[in-house]
Amino acid sequence: MSNLLAHLDIPAENCIAFGDQYNDVEMLQLAGASYAMSNAAPGIAYYSTYVTDSVEEVLEDLAASVGKDTCG
Image: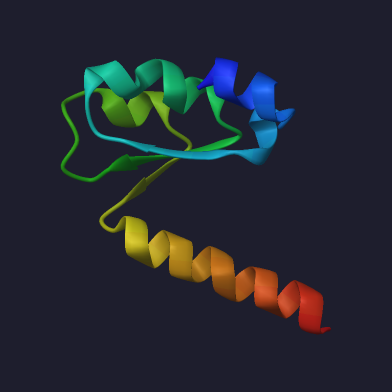
């Protein structure tokens, strides 16, 4: 992920990551906001900013908040 972000010139703090397994730990730590799934492997939530049941709900909430910011 860090290579892709560097290539695209995107700061890590502007990224969101979702993970549920031990191979996701580095990505969760790198992203500005990270979400562990509620059914993630034991200990994964420790490395994330938030815990969620649904990626879709998080993305819907983010999209709604962006719409509010741009519409006044």
